[in-house]
Image (cartoon, rainbow, N blue to C red; front, side, top):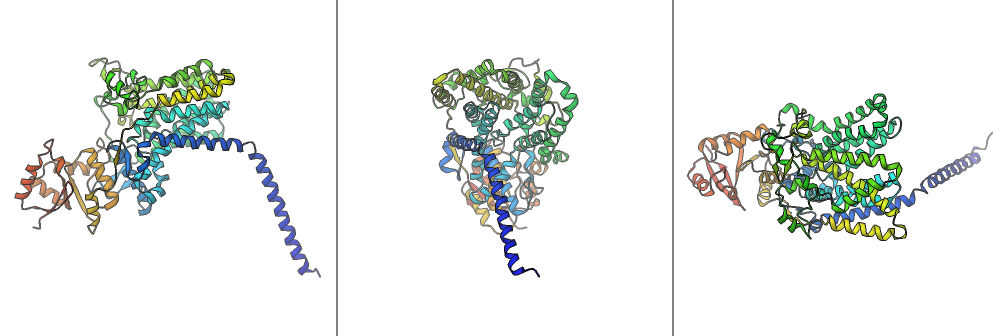
Length: 592
């Protein structure tokens, strides 16, 4: 008979000992594998930390008040703060993050009617729950700044093995005035962090003789990431990505015939996933294409690429006097004198193995710049030819189905900026290699010059939180609908959106003025006739409990002056004043 009482502990001891040996063996293997990478990991962590500091510097006016203020004057920033807040709330309420049932009363509000970085909003949802929508909105800008610079750095460092060139390229892309001016309200336009990932993955897929399976998956994923940040950037990447692929494959076009379909499939599915929220709305007929008269004005001037931005703290006011730019929010495309010099050095002095690639980068930068010039050539915000223009590629692209909803062609300048930054990184490497023992001093000088060239301006901050009328509505029990009057004005409407996060009442509202939903149009047409008796009757039939009249906006422009409204209310038996909250007069329908 076996001595089980003795053998069982012995067997357990052997098992434990064997497990320890296996664990120790795998530990040694992992340690040996990571040993060469650990210095790189530490260095990359340091670079990421430095980019985070630069990102805070780029948005320094709002840093002390992250939870209560936003950069710039109230406008689109309020809208995107609402969207950030709703996406966070929707997860707690079990609702779709793309549809707010409380707004655009009585139909509900479809958020994909405007371009937005929904993926970022989903990722920061826990922050929204803890610290509120304003903090989460500012956090998205901070992360977009940081990662935009970091991903450019990673691409150059991976391509060349030179971290210093990558760091300079990342600093240029992070601090570019184009990005900073869009951080004042365009959350989707400041979300450029996926652009380098798309072209990096495209380049990696096209470089081998045959596309590897992993590269194809990464390309599809990068396409999805671009579209989940901005539909604008998705279109730009697809258009310039075709040019990138053709230019890179010029010596070996057989690649297109043998493997091109695999790239198309990968990009197609990435695109399809990214546009699903917007694609699901096509049947609603909400998207209205822009006519060429609306899009021509957003054509960039070639000078915009060379004109320092007007918010520069040292010479911005002088530039503004020399050549005012009334559309600086969309036409600030300054590439930087220092980055352009570095990019030129990168083109002429690049190592032999990189010369073909830098030629492609320069060509794609120029192609994107041509698209940024818009439908036809403009000089000083005036078309070169008024009546018989020479149409540029963007005009013909706008006639492609669904692309008629693109309004601002100057945004193609983001692609130009990306490749100028990459070329500047290559130029920095070439200059440092020719600097000998002075290379550290030269690197410091380059960084100082770039920082001075791209010093962030101060557009000021605006407080953003629930208004007194929102707090009053939150105190009223029950689930009911209210109507804010007068209607239509964008910023006032965005305040209605944002306030709904705090009181959760229903209200007519829209997400994009060009793509205004049917329910709001009906409300708007009736509200413009207020206080006519027929309009009051129709508003009552909409089952609105309160009408909230903003006195300061009744100023005689498209609506009567407040004194006329006040007199009409006093003489009307159908409505009565309930209270006044700040600038709002609260009306209630009289009982029949």
